[in-house]
Length: 312
Length: 312
Image 1 (cartoon, each protein chain N blue to C red):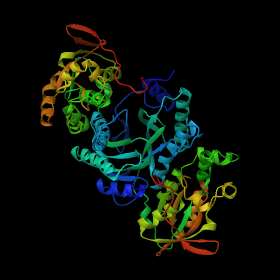
Image 2 (image 1 turned 135 degrees about the vertical axis):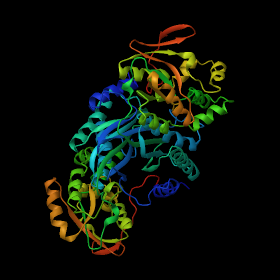
Image 3 (image 1 turned 180 degrees about the vertical axis):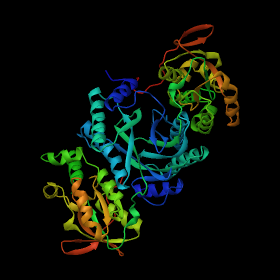
Image 4 (image 1 turned 120 degrees about the vertical axis):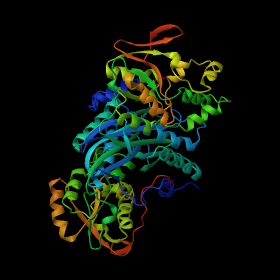
């Protein structure tokens, strides 16, 4: 019986004496501040379904790492990209590089180096560096905090399934998949203003992200499914392709940020978000109980399970 | 026509506006010192031939990154490891983790986190962090410097070919392959004492490493092949398997360090090396001319070419 991703990670945390807490990025005390470091590997197949443009691979691999810095509210110092690629055409290599460069530029950071390797399938492994005196954490949620998300969810999952199953008619979702925006500058400003109690990016999906905050903070939540913002066209996709919306948003990787915010700070946080061109939707509240969700008039426990490697 | 590894890297340096200089690790000015960051991806096949124990994969992937910190004379802050693995047995995962942990412990550093992914073949991508006020560089060689190497070469190539071609009788070479020692603490001390002018680790092989120093320093070299230390048993391997010794040491990844040292510092540097349990063999001198090698009484230009990805 093969181990699940979670079981593998629990095992490694023991074997490597890693910090017990799960965070989007690690913090190293250094020269009176905290270095924030994070790594994310993305591969053809699991992360880049057939048909994903090479430009998008470079952009997404960069955004995934930048987003993890954002979850800690860090100032970026740059990132490295290790490439594992088969013998690609020069133009394909250029397109991956262009995706990396344009994503870095867009987010105000820079790829400063890397490593080149020959592999059978494309495998991009980034590592981003940043710093902050006070990193945001998954563990800071307090009872009564609003739970908020920075933007509409579900486009990544729908686009992934569109490519995977070779569906047609969902170009808007594919475009969103190919060029995700990481909430780096927003999270820096919210962090520097002390407006956020806990944060996590949505890479593991809606339910795992909320559970991630709740389990690290030893809290519960009451969520309202109807308040979760859904990306334009994902509702139609769900209906037409017979997918449950919760299943779609649980696939994650929309590069939006979940956070908890004290009631008295919510309006100011919203203003900051608006300045950065995104919304901040309240989707529930932190409680002292279990993680519950209201949907269609019923309140039920929300299972923690979202997308995981090694689950099929 | 596919691009060579060097051509790909040159292309990326332009596309990503990376520093023109080639170094083992990148330096980021931070809080009055320099952060040193480096990434190295190792994969089944190219880096881990069939038969490589899982323990060795974890050790080698860690050592490769630690060695790059050493080449810059940095103090380690820790490293991240991204895992791409198929569904392995729990014991295999534990063995990779044990290799990572024991390699980190041995070198006085620590794996502090990572990322888990499902891939068809094992792919370990590490990123190491360190710092130093004055990073060593490939570009500091001066005319008249002695060129020195920290230990005997060729074991990695011979062991690789042993596994690749399923040869028998070379267990000592396999043991050396599976547990390489990175010259981290030695290089820190040599750097802090100002004894080294230029440094590079041998991951690209003997000739590319010497050329790496010479081209970044705009210098030449006169090497004596007979002075290059060869690992125990590699001579016999070369003879029996009909491989040229220069070909073997050009495959690299012995995790020894090449450096250039001013004449007046060489004896003191040797003492430091001895303290760290390794030698420091002079193999030639930095000149203002071309990169030449004396072998069997003849002096010829040394081609820069060693092992490269995308070369077959």
